[in-house]
Amino acid sequence: MSILSEASGAPTQLQAALEIGVEQLSNNQSIPFQQYTKYTFAVDGFVFWVATGTTQMFDGSLHILTDRKQDEDQTLAANQLVFTAEEEVSQLNAIAPDTMWIGTWQTDSATLRVAFSSTGLNYQQAGLWHYRGFAVYPALASQLVASEDDLPSGPIVSNSLPIWLAQNSMAPVYPSFLVPDNIVPPYITAHIEPEETIALGAFPIYRWPGTTRPMPGPAPLHDLPSSQLMRDTVRLTMYGFTNESAIQFYVSLMEYSLNTDDFGFCNSPSIRDAKRTQVEIAAIAMKKTLEIHASYYQGTADAIARRLILSASVTTTV
Image 1 (cartoon, rainbow, N blue to C red):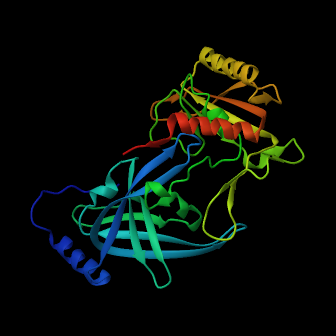
Image 2: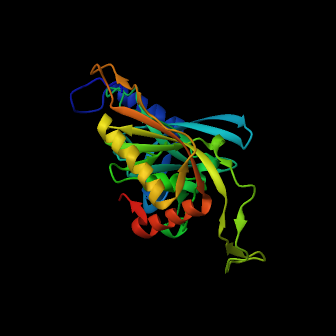
Image 3: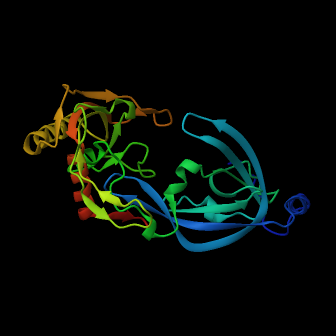
């Protein structure tokens, strides 16, 4: 962030002129912001944001840029917004991985919920603060919920991820792309290549009719147990592990496979050193990877996920 310091006191002539301009452009606009709290399912690491009921109004001018996109699985109007405030919005500046403030902006055709991810190019003499972000994409709107009652009750993933999250005896294991902010080693991430989840069994086995769950409408839901022999390509990334501790973790996976038969090895994995640098300290991270082609039954992964639910339930960071 670019900031020029100045002595405290009355607004400068530049600041006063810019504030008048912002008020004229925005027509003295106020933007409502809703506070959300982060909820993480221990079972598969999925993140949801739950509204807390706390709202605040912030004065400023909101600029919008819309870029229409057409992909295989969505037609999207990506709305990028810049919120220019006359006063610093400490809630948006705070490094708070457990809470988030989302602004609401009403357009002609829709109500946008805007999450701000960055700020910068702010000069104290100007007395303006610029916050940039995108409206929440439609495909991710389900991750924002109104209350805890709207949280899903069961596992979300269909692959073997719960099996790997359960391998946390030496260090916490996180799903790829869902590692908590600024986590310090040792820790492990589990990444499953979506395109390389393949079926080894021709068809799933269903235990019909299962248990009927009442719901409004003509079509009831069923708790329908099913299972299919699958294979995943899993990349485990270890941070903060020495050679000895990495081997010990590998051995623990082999012992787990032999003792439980929850998954099997379809390849001969090897521990590999990876390079991650930071020029400021002229060092490389203690980073290792282990790639496993694992066979498993979907029913087994689901059972492990439900055991994790019973043991850990929802992890909330309020």
